[in-house]
Image (cartoon, rainbow, N blue to C red; front, side, top):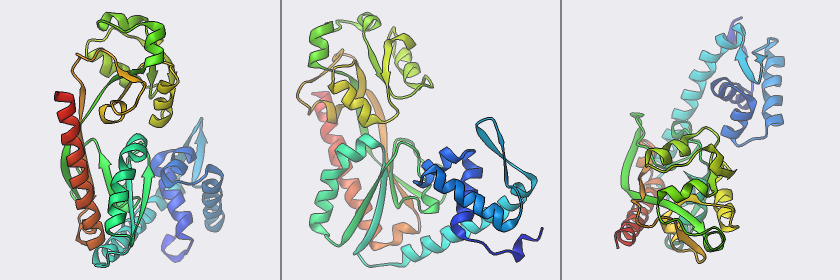
Length: 306
């Protein structure tokens, strides 16, 4: 089939591209911020327009057919071109007024970003800020966000990354939980305590056992991939969880567990695309975030050290 002679809706093409890259409609819908039925209809409409089958289902995954593989390279090139056009247009804008999207983890988005954004809006009320709260890494080169706050340094050459400080996390629990179950005097006491997890893939468990804590899967009595939900599970007295120090230390009724234990430190990186960094609005927002995050990280470090 000569794909070059066929025209189709870019939204349908984008739905196909992300589904092919993510491997399932569920993951693609999450990446695009759409519902799975909507995404499925877009892919089906593209298949209907082209008169071919693009995916075959194998278990819970979708595998590309021969026609899908042939189309993928063309649509990927279209996506890269569309991204370059959008980036160039945004980068050339020197107006301060307008939209800026920031992506960060759910806990950071809910508890750390709002006061930072409030100060930005006081100084520049013409900037419209969208916060994409997600623990998944958004693709800045495809304009899924303008600025990202990450805990890993990106390796893409088109991205600008600035290290703005270190964050710290500890084991915390509610005072009510510790009153009921006792306050651990050493790591060995954790073996009898309930923990709150963030995932089922064992990443958190591996980190904690590597730190010398004698716990296993049986200790995790509740779990949520959403950090805000995990935080509220902690507040309800359901167990011990790893939480950012700047959030937990400022919350009444929450106590550090094993306070003499060294905190878990993690880097804070601020990231944007090179072309977007030439936009006055993006640059201003980026610099405001950098100053605020650096000041917050320094204050948190002083509190942990004290």
